[in-house]
Amino acid sequence: MQGLTIHRGLRLVAACVAAAVAPFALAQALPVAAPESVGMSAERLAKITTEMNREVAEKKLPGAVVMVARKGKLVYSQAFGSLNNATGGAMAPDSIFRIYSMTKPLVSTALMMLVEDGKVQLTDPVSKFLPTFKSPMVSVPTFDPVFHGVSFRLMPANREPTIQDLLRHTSGIAYGELTKNTLVRDAYIKANVYKPNLDYDARELPGTQMAEQLGKAPLSQQPGTAWEYSLSVDVQGRVVEAVTGKRLVDFMQERLFTPLKMADTGFYVPASKTGRLAEPFPKDPATGVDNKLIDVSKVPGNDSGGAGGVSTAGDYLRYCQAMLNGGQLDGARILSRSTVTLMASDHLGPNISTAVNPGMLLLGTQGYTFGLGFLVRQADGLAGVHGTPGEFTWAGYAGTYFWAEPKEQICAVYMTQAPSPLRAYYRRMMKDLVSQAIVD
Image (cartoon, rainbow, N blue to C red; front, side, top):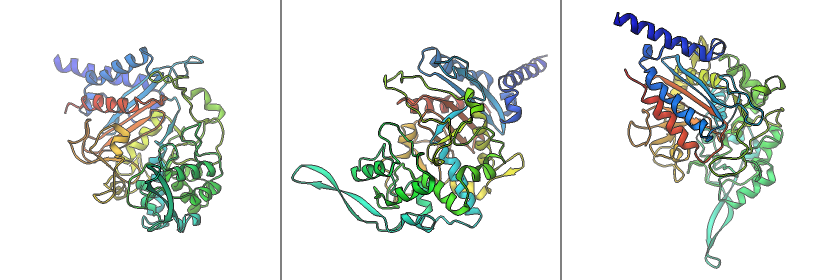
């Protein structure tokens, strides 16, 4: 009798998960399973529901979608709150989000496809494909004894940035929003790749013009010497276009989105889908600052590999699962297992400065390094958040977040539109709540 009761309970849990995602899950996400069948606790996963409902009820978040998979099975899928507080309507599992920097792993995956095709090598200089990046100058800080401040002067780079530098953010390229290097920031404003009134929008110029303008700007660091979060992935997109002769979105549609059945992922939202686009609160609840996000309602000047993507939780979960599977899902292979292993390895080592630490930037904690396209966990300990060695992860400016844990066979995606200083808090909260539900 007890076994029968447990069996019925498991069937009920599976039915509840299926109801939460169907018919969407059948088309885009992963096969549904009862959490207990893959070593997770439905009761413990319910803590996610409790916490997210509280955050929404207290108007700290406008809405969100959370999906969790273990061993290739979808064990948790829930939508919370509002899709658009101005017009009403509930968040749904197939809601579309601006994913900002979660575009980066997708584009790095596309570039690594060209490495596998033999058309690009990690040691190639960027100028091999984008000539304006040849013979770069570096803006070097110097202390001014008269004014007791820092000024900048230009000097030749010790070497050119490579494809590997682009993938691991050691190219010397920066973000205008983050850099303190005034010569670099001014050059980015002039090049129209940094807009002081709208964060992370480098989509206005056509791709070739964007590459040409950015290539003329000085670097903020000597290539290969320091990790600095940057426009490097936008440049990766321009390399893909130069090598293939195709627009970035077209190459990615052919080689990534279509094979993985990521039907709602791209670089803008067509008119037929704008009713599914999630929006933030008009003002950030924590700071009172206006929330300004990019306009994704029309085709951009260029496909911004660093911050221009849109996707759904289900689409991104399929990408996450494919990478966790060693580069394949449902018979579609996008990368080899060896390439995924290479991407999810430490590419900084002891000789590259991490004065701005990747883990601190993303999660507010040490214990992480950077691979080729995303953050990589180094050990069970050190980091002040749940996780295991080999985990790879990244997030987006508007609040989106994903991680894959090979050791625990976990994939999780958290989607919201909340560009708040509290982003790292919610990322840590999600990791802790998912990990505590593992019971095998």
